[in-house]
Amino acid sequence: MRFTRPKVLGVLPFIVVSLIPIFALAQELFLLDVPDSLRLKVVYPADGDTVSFDRVRYAGSALPSAKVWVQGSETRVYPSGAFVGLVDLEPGVNILSFTVRDSLGVLSDSLRMFRTPGRRSLPERPTSVNTSEVRPREDVHISPGDVLEVEFHASPAGRASFSIDKIVEDFHMEEASPANAGGLQGIYRGSVIIPPRKEYSPKPVEFKFRGKDGRELKFKSDGKVHVLSELFPLVAVTTDSLTVVRTEPGGEIWMELPVGIKMQITGEREGLKMVKLAEDVVGYVASNSLRMLPVGSPLPQASIGAIGALQDANWVQLRINISKKIPFRIQQFVEPAALEVVFYRARQAPQWIMYPEDDETVGTIQWRQESASEIVLRVELNQEQQWGFHGRYVGRQFRLYIRRAPRFSNLADSLLNGLTIVVDAGHGGEFEGAVSATGLLEKDVNLKFANHVATLLEAEGANVVRTRMQDTTVTLQKRLAIARDTNSHIFVSLHNNSISPATNPVRPRGTSTYYTVPQSAAIARKVYQRLLTLGVQPFGRVVSTYFVTRQTSLLSFLVEGLFMTHPEDEMLLMD
Image (cartoon, rainbow, N blue to C red; front, side, top):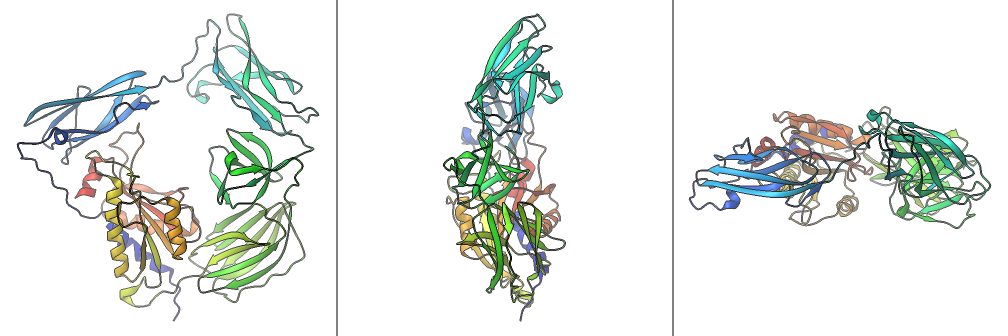
């Protein structure tokens, strides 16, 4: 008998609550022969660390009854013996001192840190320029019609301009306000739209600057401007099995493309190639993920034909005839449930659509011409809860795979029967993860959580697959390969949280869940809500772009049980 009951997801939060398990941590407090390593242990920062910020957090442990001073100021010692806090750093060498006083006497330790000097505004007089802060620092590849931005750092309240041979001459530059320049004065910026050219040899940017004392300086950028030819477009092909396309350098992940996809290159910024997917549609790809094709290679263009359909017990396949591999992007919608595949540099050929026999999964299939070079395939679904999708090229076809709803048992003691769930213990082996103030390793806590969760899921009838059962190193790719090879329905990655080196360790705390794909939003929300009923602090339900949560072929989410770096959260993990 077939049951498509997405309400089964409501069972999982009651099982994943075991993320806050009970395991004992004994401390011998009354032994006379207590080693110094138990009386005073500093786990963060490490001796010899170099940082660029003006403060750093510290974390360590002592005997619970001890008193601890850091840099001469007393700090709180928690019942676990943990102590944490922040100390200020001066530019250059800093000596951090730690002193403990307990029933055995006084013990001290220190460590050395180096803070790199920060950026500072230059004086108005005498007129000067920081030649290490002139942009572009590296060569820039740009197409006619695109905007080139230039910048340098000099004495404030001056007059600045820039020129590029045969492109622009003495263009005015504005001094940015400190609020828009990281608090600095004397940051001068300018921009120009690159005009069409007949001569394409690379040119440096030439700057002129006159300070308040009347002194004039001339200097050039280290990076040169390469204007790409409109007559011979550059074409590259993806070389990685998973090539990330971003909205901008350092921006969000926009799409992930397979190997063998050709794209037009229109420029380069910050080590990333600018790719033109369609008219007014651009993205950025790491240069080492692309192979440049010979000059004169044709731009990618494909015609799209008929749609066929196949299905098996787990998947519905829509097979689209297509003449060439072109860039594509799959979007998922929840209300109403639908998938859209955007094909770039495509045109539609006369075609017909064959529907799959499974009308429980696929509703309607429609084409939409988004622009002259963009075609959208919209597949409306009959699923209240979507279970997975992915797309790939096979020969001269693009195949869209849509996960069918699993078959659930109607027996009260085996509600999860029919589900395959991957329980992933985060980190492991050479990857320790976060370290608490008392030296507790996240990888060990995660493994205990995962083993307990797996046992509870199995008791409810689920087929559970574990990515690791011991303290072993498992790559992210291997973890996801395990999920793929077992045709799993759900992937839950169990972790515990940490903070950055300059964050106050007594502030961020609590539990959180993370997801990327809309189909995983419901289970991430239910688990988060259930965790909060345990009385732990809320940290949030977060949309992220973690590698494991970006997977679309199954429901995938990540749980950060509590903060290893917060002493009270750590005590909950140890209790």
